[in-house]
Image (tube, rainbow, N blue to C red; front, side, top):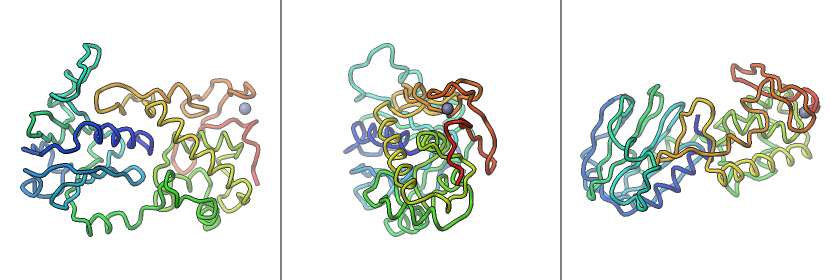
Length: 285
Ligand SMILES: [Zn+2]
């Protein structure tokens, strides 16, 4: 599932390639994946992009917003005339056509196209007004890369519940943008056992964990995000991220810990695959 860095990479790409373009046509292949009346956005120009956690917004010149959530398997693919430097190695041309999992196709006035693909159909695109966007995101917590994600905010939210830290970090109503990859790896870097109750994390430890979360997000951004083993996440030009080559414990069950060589364990906490080193992650209360 795309997390904060993966969605941010998509946003940065779109910022570079579709800003100022006018939507000339909209093709909805799966009504479940699209909410709103296409007539309200046809002829409108994309003027800016923004992101909150895993949600991506395209702002239009009539004040409406296209809100994207990629959920489990959503992909945004862009192909067309303005990609520049068309090298034969780029799979974009092959990808930039309607496929089995294509749910929505946006065509711009320069004939370039944006495809919203989603195998499992949990993702969606919605047309919203500014007020509706505020309403839709009122229960989304502070973005991990926002200045509002302070030590104080983080520690207070951790203190509010006795659920396991592993599960609490995934709670988008508290912190927006953390998914299973960065959750597992940040706990490893902080030497915290994933089963520990959230409210047992000390202020000092919360500070370390928060910094590791921020550092990991930035490190992954630098690597172009993570294209994990399922290969679901790719960049809008069809290329892959490279942070998967830098995973600490995530998807490394049975492999040696990068610090102590102990075999990485995989258990389930709150129904989610949890990877950890039983030796390094010794902080249990
Ligand atoms: Zn270890």
